[in-house]
Image (cartoon, rainbow, N blue to C red; front, side, top):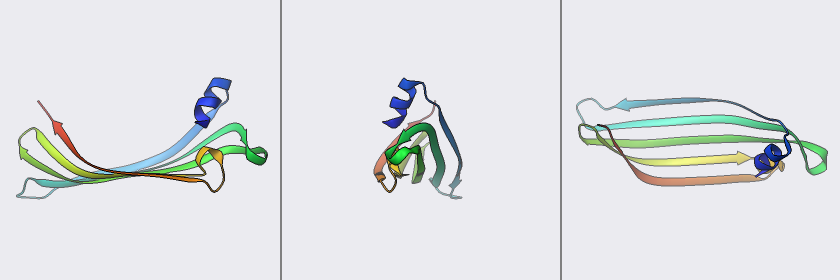
Length: 108
């Protein structure tokens, strides 16, 4: 990726962003829901096409429904989506990745 090239050449990379997340357990049930949204912007002093500086915007979210059948074990059916605008510093190039899955967590 562009970041690996920049790091190899000793050029600077700056990422700024924010995120918000939360969860909720439905009262009287073993079900819950959770979500997370992240937004960041990556900039570098690397020059890309037409002499412009490397810059891309990343948005990522996860949304899920969870089920806790016994204490310490949680299953979650989740959707995980990432969208990168101006991917690799190329204006107008967008990369999208969406994943769905069943995840498990065990706490001891």
